Length: 300
Image (tube, rainbow, N blue to C red; front, side, top):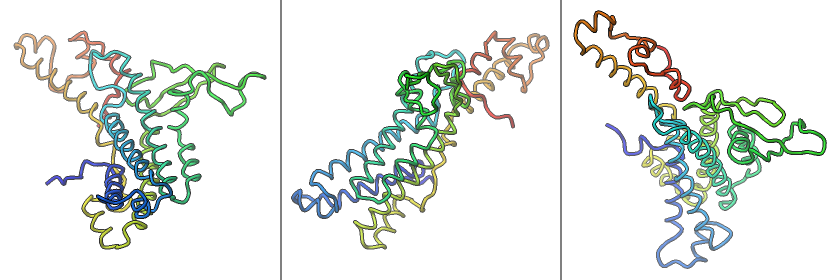
């Protein structure tokens, strides 16, 4: 039987703990001063800051789930949404991640959790952080530290190679203004960010939770209720749906072909293991162009 929080990520569950802490501090009829004292924050408006961070983490986690399911593009043989969707989802997921990590950093500040500078540096060291700056933020005015710009010009600029933009973009290229190529694995960088952000948010929330809720039994009960079993990473990879959609579509085509008359079957020698290449010949479908847009399933 599926549990209530089984499909919730660790980050989502941790925001529920923070909401509980807020409800503990923001009691009905309490003054702003009393709320500030119970929440153990510096300013009377900090409860609203905490809530803003929670909301943004939850909203951006929704975008992260959507990318986990389809990457930059949902499977389609005919690319019905065009290339515009690729860029919309590319810029969207990179900036959603940027908004989320800054919300986590802000929580460290407002909740007075030690190690904020270390957290900032750890986020900046991630490849996804560089990808966001190169691809979706400072693409034409990137302050480069590699000293490859001509003397008197401190900036760099980039073009994204469209042919390498696929659903997972595991070989994404950015060509700078001086013909240097930077290669990125967007999907792996995305997974790495989720692992690191889970660890950082977990440390933040557990630290604050222990300060607000002194009773360990109460804390354990709440962790149990929200199905938080320590730092147990959520598996974002299992959410990916394009491979299944790809296989299902090929199976449907194969079944449709087998339903044709015997003369057609004999002439084309159709069987249940029909290859992608034969489907391409039969249906005159440009499967190669599709492959450039959606990552095919792993061979098994």
